[in-house]
Length: 219
Image (cartoon, rainbow, N blue to C red):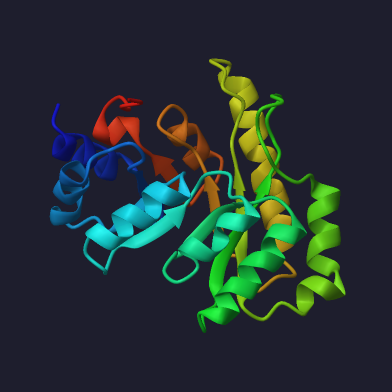
């Protein structure tokens, strides 16, 4: 199947209210342009260097999402243009994003990353940490970031029950927080292997790479 067939099939299979982030990490610009020229303009990268390189070399109406683990010392490189940062896992990172956004006269949208998986390799905050962060005076003082929702990654397992349990738990937390936070609109969960489960559990943003572009090139 070609990239465009893959893209078309995924778009047909997901509801209209679900935003598809095409994860273009490790992929060459010509592959990304194929998707862009088909009318899709939301792409996700997980490495800052690759994200800035692609931003500089591609059309400027692309909405770039930073979906990987972001180090504080790298925020300055993406602050001028990034549309959404998915993996905010500490107040210190949020504070740095705010500082760099202010320098660029921007408000940067962010998602708080919630730790939902039963794996040590994943990053994220737990429920208590998120509630504490959102209620803190320090958070309320940040004027150049807007927390628009949550992001989570399920355990990498073939156990569908476990995946659905993790996604459902995140949706419950999202709904709870949304009652008090007007800016909450985005629940980013689901990747190539599990996005249909994520959508069933209430996700409205999915991050899909290999199911569109094929296997990754880690050369």
